[in-house]
Amino acid sequence: MLLQSLVRYYEILTKDESCDIPAKGYSKAKVSYVLVISMEGNLVGMLPLKRTDAKGKKMVAVEMEVPEQLKRAVGIAPNFLCDNSSYVLGFDNKGNGKRTRECFEAFKQLHQTVLAGIQCAEAIAVIKFLDKWLIEEASSHPVLQEYLEDIYAGANFVFKLEGEVEYLHQVPVIKRVWEQYKNFSDSGEFGRCLVTGEYTKIARLHPSIRGIRGGQPMGNTLVSFNDSAYESYGNVKAQGLNAPVSEYAAFAYATVLNHMLADAGHRLAFGDSTIVFWAESLRSKDYQDVFALMNNPEEMLQVEDGEQIKLRNSEAVEYVKSVFMKIKNGKKVNHQFSLDENTKFYILALSPNAARISIRFFLFNNFGIYVEMLEKHYEDLAIEKQFGWEPDAISIWRLLNETVAPSSTDKLASPLLTGSVMRSILTGSPYPVALFNATMIRIRAEKEINYMKAAIIKAYLSRYKQCKKLKEEGVLEMSLNDKAENKAYVLGRLFAALEKAQKDANQGIKTTIKDRYFTSACANPALTFPVLLKLSNHHISKAEYGFKNENKIEEIMQLFNVEENPFPKNLTLEEQGIFILGYYHQRNKFFSDIKEASELKKNAEKI
Image 1: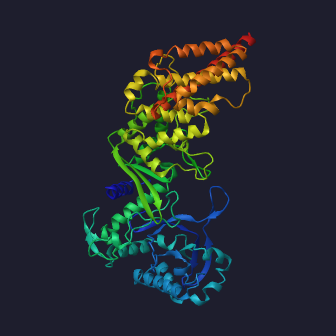
Image 2: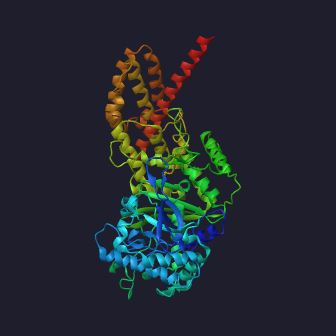
């Protein structure tokens, strides 16, 4: 299903005149230099193509469309009119002169075969160049001396005829004979393609996939077999023949996947996973814009490596802004955009696994379903902010970062957790228990409940099996519900009130009861709260306005039913989450009251 979906998308993109995706027989490659040859086949010049990178710190090769680059294992496999010095010039610094000579001879043979009999000045010049080139004297050729260090580093070359503008691989006659060669070459096995269903030539090696976070520089493989344990009966060392995919299908899926991975504005990275997504539509970028912005709402303008990417579709930006504004104000979100909700939308998460690619998940559904699931996710997360500068909507990558210890050398969230969280968001299923547990562990370790962690706890409990009962009790609100009688919620509020009493009695105190008692109060209320209430009497008597805190503590205590044991021996993990929400809500209420009083005082002074 995955390969079929990618091939279909490739075929959609080839119909889009504005898309620069390579046609069959071509691929994108990084090229560093142009070899300029004369009509007589002499090397007369070498032009650097390197450009300064986006950060302006180093020179990098330019990416251009060239004849399809073969995937190399250990054998010798020359590319047409674009390759490195081992093949094009017959020398390198790898210390194996015999192999280098064989590479050059294979490159020469390929071009003699493809260009044989072509009455074209450029083709004739290439054949002459290869016929007269002396690999024994190559490294001392005066044209190459200035660039030897880069040549040894593996730079790729293309060709150009002296006095002409076009590269040789762009000359129409040469392009035509290359495409004919690719289409009618008799080499290779034939069979029934599992993707297209056609009886055609099967790809033995599939192209590499580049651009995956943490992947190998030369790319990773999505489909490969290199061990007898994975081989079908009779297909010994047959590699791609074990799962027959046509050369066309292999080219199409790899090309479109590399195309999407190269599009920084329409890929996402969470943990070790790289996520690409697309719609079966010529307007796919508009669908991608909405999806990307809803996963990363903090940025309406994407920036990567210092290079500013074009502003997204304005309709997508306005739509996403309206969604989060409604969620912020507690209003129901209604779908109002011109995109077809019934368009098929695909989401693919990939991560590197040595030389191969692991598929974290592959999801597909109607686009409207995913929009609805993301809206539901942000509604579940919505909670009152701790500080005004914090984002109204928490992006998924920031949410996952809350599960990582600040002191950890590995700043990425668990790969398994990343995949399961994304699946739960996109399918509307309960959030993984591991997300909740990891957040609770961080709270116990750091003794701090911030906006992000409180939002995670609220979201988890919103999809918890007892969600309906918790909502009826009013503990999953965006802000404080001072009427809620849920025991764990009230205990959290009480702890916040006791902490405030201590702070008011000791202005500027840095270590409070939260640092010493929060974990035990959350897990074992019966053991901790009698001690805290006793301490509060001292704090209330010491503070200038201690009676206010005393009244608040009494007000909260009245919500308990004395006959139902207000201080239980212990709380379940979910009840501890409710305790934390109660504490967070009450603490925020204290902050807002202080801020409001301060504003009133300033206004009164102005009068």
